Amino acid sequence: MVESLKVLVVGAGWLGLPLAVALQQAGHEVCVSNRSGQSAAFEAAGLRALALDVDQLLPDLTAYQMVVASFPPAARGGNDALYAERLQRLCQGLASNCRFVLVSSTSVYPQAGGVYHENSETVEEQVVRRGELAVLQHFPEALILRAGGLAGYDRRIGKHFSGREIADPSQVVNLIHRDDLVRAALHLLQVNAHGYYNLVAPEHPRKAAVYAADLHALDLPPLLLPAEPEQSVPRLISCDKLLETGYRFQYPHPLFFSGQDGSA
Image 1 (cartoon, one colour):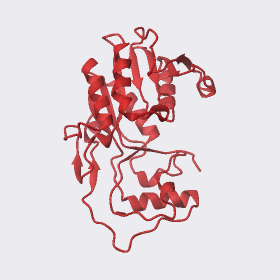
Image 2: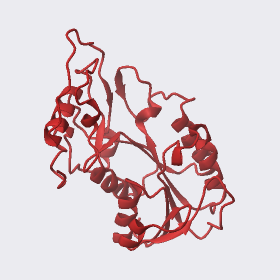
Image 3: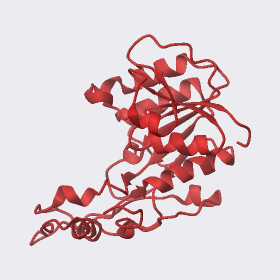
Image 4: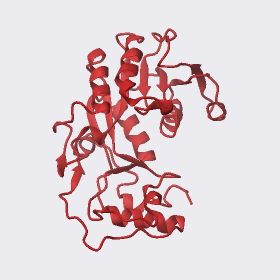
């Protein structure tokens, strides 16, 4: 993807906004959406905004050559069962030759231990998986980014476990730094990729180590380790397909996310 495109980013939040900025910096004409069409963050980033509510009648979106959907299943605190319907409604309002990018999740894979690749089985009734299928009905060549747990900057998963016990501290994490997700998305667009891609860091340290590093960086009380911890089979999401495209991670090891991005 070399030519400049007219791009709409639907869901310009913690991830979508920096992705929109990166697309604009890459030379594309980018518009971001929210219900009101107004946002101080959009203005500060120099992005044009569009009033759009995926639960209501949509404006004419056929002029957009690429659309990036980056909103969570339970958008704005709503019912996550409507996620697939929202995506389907969005797809129906686009031109048939639109390039569609969906930020999905590795939650589509079973929670059981094992190594999961893009062609591994998925939980078909899972809400995010139903969203993927809704998009593919309209855009079979869509680029679907199955993101791992998002981390970096102010988002440190370990803070939720301060002073708490985790049942299985030896289980591994499948995380990705926000900067790498943005960079990987642009890379995949540049190489005209389509289909499913797992976006997770290539290193998978244990939960206990990552959470402890987060808590230390935040100067919070440590997590508690059980006297008899569980010993489950690691659940590991592979990013081999992404690496085969030539992408190289800026933050390959989640244990060292804290502090590498200028965050406190």
